[in-house]
Length: 431
Image (cartoon, rainbow, N blue to C red; front, side, top):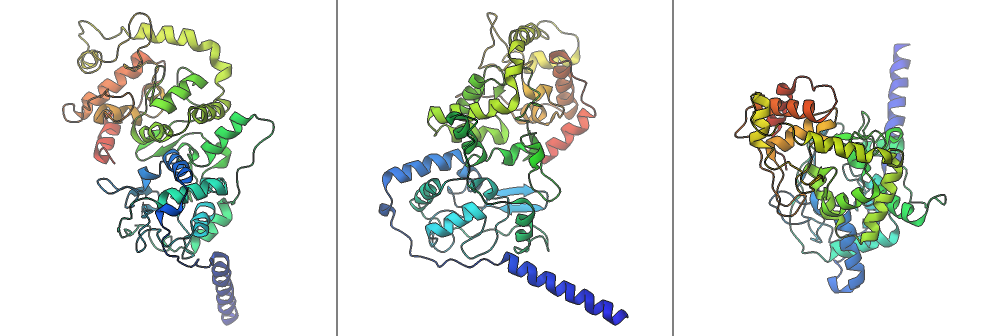
């Protein structure tokens, strides 16, 4: 009897292995001689440059201090660190030997030229929505970049999760290759925005929570998620911003990195307006049209004036002679820059009573900004917020965050703030 059980288990195991092998097998696509850069039309290359910028390709395919698109950028996942690959046209270590069909298969199906399945850290589940024309433009752009010889770094995904054939099982569960299909009930601008948001800009990759296997939860699209030690806020109606994100404010924020009513793009989000700046203004407006349709801001439009007036009143809290230690910290470190004037919100001095970082349930974003500041290249041109990591203790940072929470919002106090500050400080500034 035992012998039959063992044989049965062995047969089932063998069938599973054979089935997985059959499911995962993809043929290699023959390597080609690297096409001459001059073989690609200039207009196609230019369109590819716009798309590559809107997809933030350089952000994930360029290591700190490394050459553009040569890979090596570490992406921390719940399963280990995945290092981006070299997408310059170097034949030995990049994609110089890739044909356009091989490149298109990687973008649309998440399969490398040699037939290996790619980890979903590469967002092919979004790029699958791109048209063949746009993929061809991206191919033309990358094939005309400077070739850089840069060997791939080894990922730290542990065995057996590191086995590429297992990715076929992941795709079976969570991935459906498909191009974007316009939705007739909506207009051209909405559909263009949806195509960009869900496709090349892959906004859901950061703003959608993921399940235990790392796939986006499609029943909670754009509900916000942690990413790179920051919190990507919800883009749906649960967004905690005191003032609803209107179409105009989204256009300003996505196009320039700063909104007078919401503040400055920081952390991983800072790359987004820099990338979207390459798009024509009508495309940025289309993205805003699509996002506004998700966030329910139309229903909150009437709240706007009252919310702004309340913020302007709060702006005067904590200035002048102070005896409260927390208020003194605010007066010394924040008040000289974060102020309004003449009864209006000053876009270059982000109003903290309107800032999402102060009103979120999680204090991570506010603490990170206080600790490490905002770089000159982010947000408003030439405006820098200094970080206080060196001068302030964890207790100082916690006291300041608690003070802003108490005086600028009606939200409950954040618990265990000092421990949270210590934990975030230990993570470091990041990339």
